[in-house]
Length: 313
Image (tube, rainbow, N blue to C red; front, side):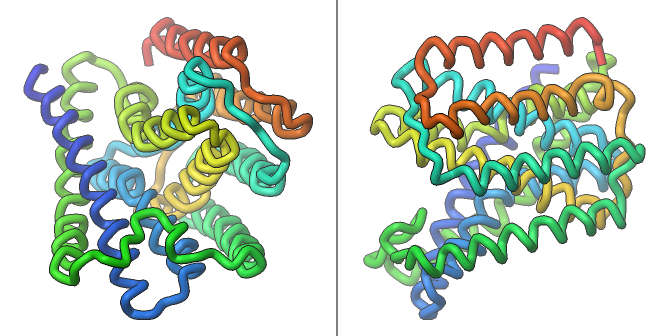
């Protein structure tokens, strides 16, 4: 058991570091090749930051652990709102503005779409294509709006004009090698833990793996709260949740079928939708997420984890 936990921890660390290095290397390589900053931001950065979750889901399906893939995404989306926004709000109230309203409505629509597809009993080929089509529409809209905002290279995550070519190559190679290695360690360890504890891979995906793969968002949001950039934090969470459902599960559905567990239909899908709806009043009224509301979000997440333990999935 200790070995399995250590394997999961090492896998998470490798995934997070490799994902960060891949983004840094790929962004600077693309800019050196004179690819427009807008396209870099909308493609390389976006895909790179989602790569850890994507590889974990694909690896889980290949190991016949579809519940782990589903739990990773649904659990991450729940944790992103209740935990990742709740904890930083205790440090400093998160300012909210309606500039994220369009993206929020898209995230909400994709969440409803995924729930409807999940009620068919499986996320497979055609369901995945529907999710990918929704993702394509989101990307097209983002690119259109991005052209109007004229994204600058210096504003891109990981951009460093002074980075030597050798370091760019090193970061890119390490990222490409490290991501599948980390995913393999994480999924193998998580499956072994599930077997040892006698619980489903869904349970492990909803808890350990979901929180682990949400650590980058948590770190980013904490720093945004400290710098009083709540709008940035909220935008990151909305984008991450949309990518998780539309891109990651869309691609995963092309790899293999993911049967929806009965417990997910009874609880997790509705908690995910409920957590998404909690953001609506803040975004619509532009009221900050205060420390009190941060505490409420955290209590909500604690209640969800308690419910999982009671169900004993």
